[in-house]
Length: 70
Image (cartoon, rainbow, N blue to C red; front, side, top):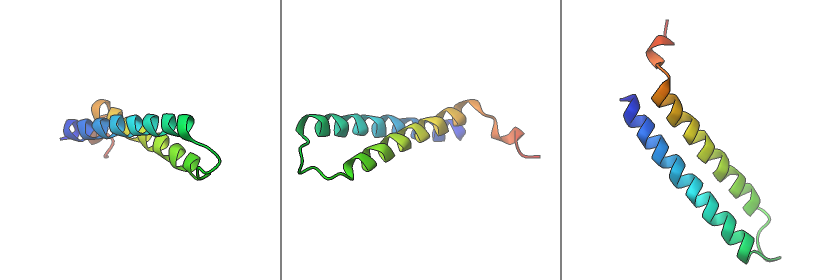
């Protein structure tokens, strides 16, 4: 079951990081003074969620959670 969750979170992290990269390059090439300043906050949170999903995916693959419960 944990491998299923790991695969789901890995796919979510890949999708999130790809979306972050696409949005960042769009803002970098097409952004001007009319671009909202809050886009950087959105980009930062997109990157943070992508890295967080990646960490959760690796934890699901490599950490045995049943040994953590006393």
